[in-house]
Image (cartoon, rainbow, N blue to C red; front, side, top):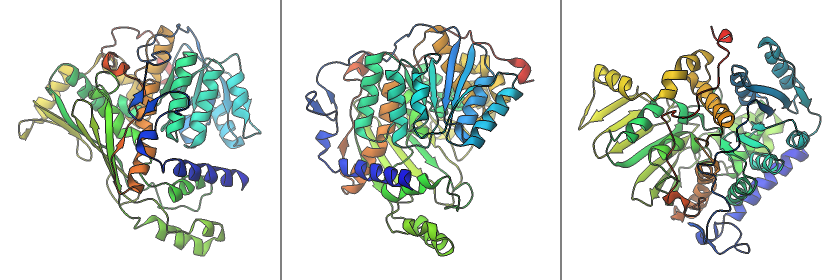
Length: 473
């Protein structure tokens, strides 16, 4: 009960902190002269393109081994050059399941941290860890654990979204810069095969100049809209006090990479609008009639069922970003890029590319796929499909993360991406609560976007991490 009260108190405080003028949505002005579009000056240290010292064997700790955590752990077991040293969770069943998986994959048991809500601190302080993988329920702990882990000298891979408030975003960035530790948000959708294909096509000029992109996270609920399970009560509490785009990164990440956001272009401002809630409140009301536990959640303050946000970039591009996890709709991340020469679209229909006003034929699409598929997919794609995890993109993400650490390569998604893609959540809330007024978006690179290098999809460096192929045959 106390943990739940603490969580709700924190998220309400986060909302209150956003009821301020847009120009104040930067880092604490007592530290620097700040506007929402960036600091005056330069970053403490530019983490975009940073090549940390290579780590031959990456010693990994997993904090949170529930549904996402155990999936991330499984992907890691297929790689050589990795040692899974520690697992941390408050749920003994989750710990047992993780240990069983390690045994099944012919790996030694991991050291266990449990028994306390703060056990994650002990994990971060462990000197035998190089990388901390964070998959706890989204909220304040994402940034808190990531920041503490970097302070303890660890690289970080954190589930989406990486931050909860604008202030956390700045703290995450400055901690990464000061410690020179990577903080990669595990935006696995950037490693979807079609998204990687179209990213490479953008690099090769196929689409011409990118004008606009659509991105989304839309799907009907997995099971009942509101379940009687208390394991996910954090999700219900979250939607009780937040109203905006609460899960912006999945569709946004690939579009940002195609537009070279933080690496040649930057966000400037956004507007956001939410519908009313037509569904969740009614579902909670019905559940509360059967179970008194849910009476405290029986309110009329739930977030709107559909949120639409529009983002404009410094170079005049636009992005439409949508979020809806209540309506009975077919799954869609809507990966759409519109350029001066061609366009592409995936979801809810199969992937398509158009030139002019006509979709290319299946044969033409296959020819383009053969021509533009990036090397990382050609080299690792077949193993990724066998390993699974959202069709293989989880495995591609994990392999690439480890390969970059082992070879001292820059991260495909760095701390600036983690902060920027995630900060759309609190900024969208501000806009929604202020009648969709525009709000400026911070430049977390502090001007370095002008010369930062775009994400490398060529696999010209690295590629040395071997796969335990015997486990995937």
